Length: 87
Image 1 (spheres, rainbow, N blue to C red):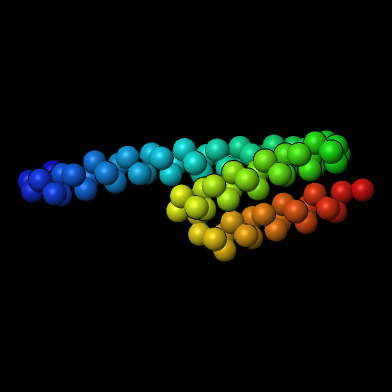
Image 2 (spheres, rainbow, N blue to C red):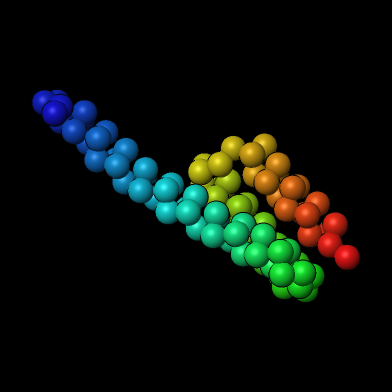
């Protein structure tokens, strides 16, 4: 355990940020899973709605620093490609 006051604070701040980032990543994964489920069921309208929600959530996570912008761009691009490929 750290003895210096600033080191103790860093530990607490790191824990707080880790928990917040983990929650944001989990939330994004849930939204992506909803898109994948809608694609699997074949419901294009539901897939498009879920995609819009997932896109917004991923963008929010990126602005908070949870994901790198290229990672978000790649994830959104792959989801969009999958939704657009539906008949």
